Image 1 (cartoon, one colour):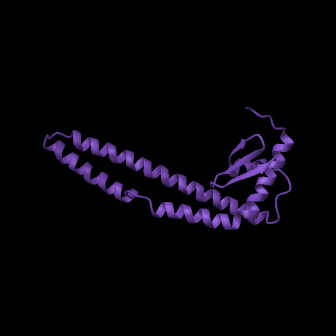
Image 2 (tube, rainbow, N blue to C red):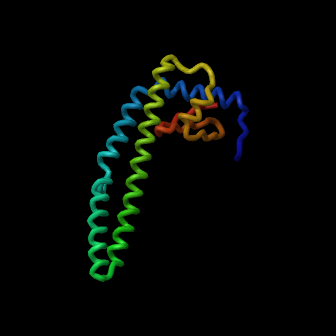
Image 3 (tube, one colour):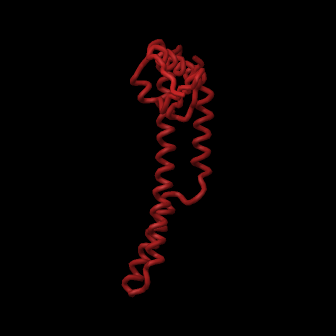
Length: 153
């Protein structure tokens, strides 16, 4: 069921979500940052440097095989697989860096508005909120650092 929400109520709920975020952020920030760092540290599979090194080695083998007129299909496939793997690792790292950056922005917000946000700020919403989901009795605010805050209506 689609629910219409009047703008003043949405703005009021947004300010409430930011204030909840500010109030509980100190502890949550440390936990979220620790979780992100743990994911980065415990990422299985090779690092970008290791993939680049493997790519270089396989590309040299491919050049040698081509010079000796040998079949290059397996080496070509290996290079394509390594490139796909590299894209996945880069994407994961970019996503984690974006979360850390969003967390830094939220830390700035908390420092600037220690005692809470009074007025709706559309620019803050664009910078820090990933999405707002409206349910029958509450709204859910998902921030770009991964935090989710629920505001009852």
